View 1: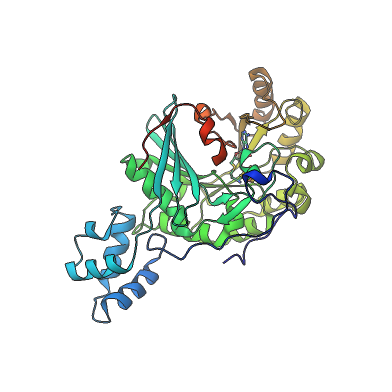
View 2: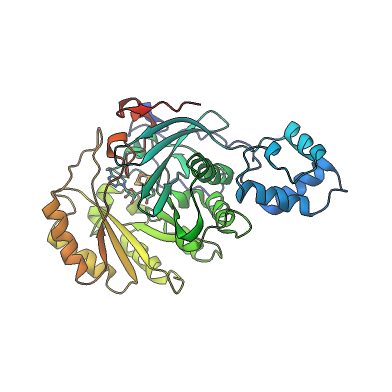
Length: 387
Ligand code: SAH
Ligand code: SF4
């Protein structure tokens, strides 16, 4: 299951209580595959095993479309199936959607979901509505093994990879719960929750295939973005995938030394190699690379930093999103002033489109880098949708 997992740092905490200095000891096995997360071939096999060889081939398509397109929540809801097959399936299988354990509503309209997985672990997903757009920020791992010094998720360490079903399940659950519309490019998905998506490569790619399949969830490839801390060989591998999200790189530093200090993974995947992988990345005609840059006061936010970043990105078809640090307990950095952020942006803008990302859900610990389940009790006014 974890053959594609590389431990980027030898020294990672296992859970919230172990702190940053504890060693990564074991990783729990992922749970068995559920129906949500299966591709058409797997559902075909399952129908054959359950209903016997006489079941027509189109049954699998009916189930596949009912789960991903019509977002059925149980076999009973798949009314296109004969009652006998429905009962047989329901008696032996579970769709495997995550359960909503808690919902936290922010004053800015965003919502943080604590979702319970089949093995009892929980993971976080955030919905950010804005005007005509809804963005779901999904997790790809329970915790994260990458030790970025400014990110609360790092305190969790890695508990386990999410299965493809658990990745797709977050989208189905949150879009179903809010009756989100998918038409007209309204719905966007970003893999920017807990976890490093490229360290769970196969499950992330399988989930992406289902989400992008016109007969599956049917999302446009322009509407899904994967953000990575810079796992260079996996960036190269992702470029070879036919169904792939847009790529965002969490750059966060203007020199190798600075990056190593705040993102120790840069020791394993140096900045120069990362930039080379970005230059070689096969962009589609409509696509740009996105670079995210978390501004830490007095660390990486000077005008000289901005000029160095501009130089690094000069030959790339790219845009930059600046994020002023979202603070959190035990994060040893401060947020720069709005003037500093504006000055950084002005310099970047001379050569590359550069935007300032507004934090969402700060009051419910839902903003970038704040997803860590142990802060649940501290978030203000959890809305009691416990189910
Ligand atoms: N692991 C992936 C995706 C999840 S993190 C990655 O690192 O890219 C999503 C984004 O949140 C990243 O760009 C990361 O740099 C940013 N981030 C992490 N901690 C943050 C914080 N405290 N304040 C603002 N942004 C943060
Ligand atoms: Fe992991 Fe991304 Fe947080 Fe770094 S910023 S610890 S890679 S979730």
